Length: 183
Length: 97
Image 1 (cartoon, one colour):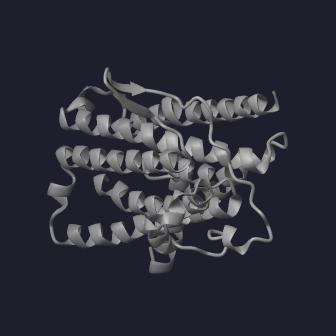
Image 2 (cartoon, rainbow over the protein chains, first blue to last red):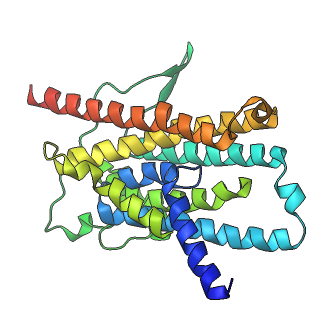
Image 3 (tube, helix red, strand yellow):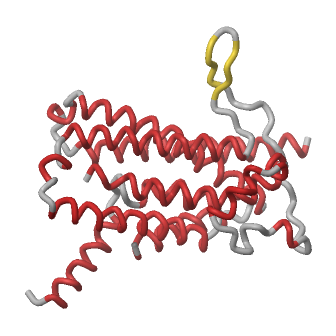
């Protein structure tokens, strides 16, 4: 098989693997894509995840070349990676829920209670003429969003809603990077 | 990468196909589903990691990863979507009353 043929076969296998449910394919990007509530942002969610994943795959190929394969393929390392990926996911989930004012659990004197918030916070109505309301649509990146998170403006619920997709893409990339270490 | 982009686009537009929802409701359902799926899915992954460290995969007749992702979809992702959908619709009805 020539290099070009190998490349075509790899591409086709890649497409097939992308359709199959796996811990580093669409079931994981589902939450980021559906959270974006738009086709364009959904595509971005998939691309961010797979880009971080590809970077990780390049690194692991180099580590495999350096004869670390037996260590990296041990079930114990897999278990630890699953745990780290799980914590990354839960952290992202808690952050998303906190931003939109949904509490998963609260602390009280009787201990930790799982609780659903009685009334949902109202989503602010976006004014199409107000440029300041379009931080995300105007291309605010994850890194750009960090100073805004630290600012007083972040206290406003409407700002939190606008920052949500930027944060999601950051976590999406982070999880994409983490998720393949167990493979 | 290409397939994840295509499937991501599909999931992103999925809620827009239901014309009975307003754009705000779609965003809210999407964000809540995402948050719940990530949070509870993350807990499931962490438990699976502990299970793997304890050697549970030896006792499963099928691949551990497939079982995990099957459980992820059945007990986390789909219920999170249904729950968030119902919650947002109920909140909308409360607002009308």
